[in-house]
Length: 251
Image (cartoon, rainbow, N blue to C red):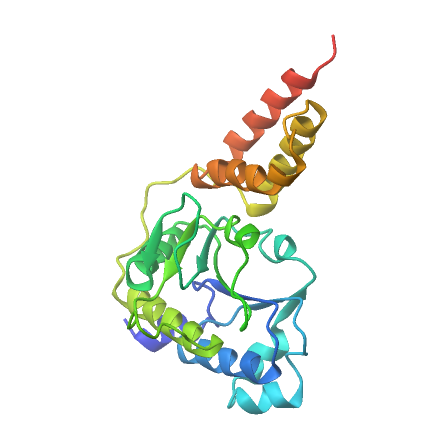
């Protein structure tokens, strides 16, 4: 099989989307697009960018990857940006206080390849240059992704993180086996899961579950992590809605 044609000629249809959350500089957006083009990843999504992806500084820094910049999509919120995805990885440079599987990029990419080949839509989150991803943003992810580096100096700029992750994706894609023939149940999208979690939070609020306002954000993240980690199918989410219907029904 022609490796180039296997992923480049279809403009990344078998690749994940890369989501930059609150990127601050046009040049960094452009260099991230350049790194994506190197690795055959074409779907760039931006959440609340400070500068436009079609700014001259971004186009110049992309070194010919302007196709990605001009086709990129801008979203006001992260929930909107990931709504159509079934599986989400989030990059982080440090351990976080949440129960999530942490994988290296080399470990995570073969898993992502197989999930996409089975028909799911996947994405990878990258945080802003200054602060990275916030805990509430990490909570949306199914798994966390890290890149092992010199412990004395783990700092990466945005485009470096995109390139290293994209390169591991490219290697995994090129060496992956054919997609599984056995049909799998349809996995819930992030939008479907978020709608259920929002409804659950409202019900719990009405029942007085969040008694201490200061603890509510952490309690909400913990609940979200439970359901995200479960890897729910569309049918399972519908079942959970049915459970809420029964619990909230007034006879």
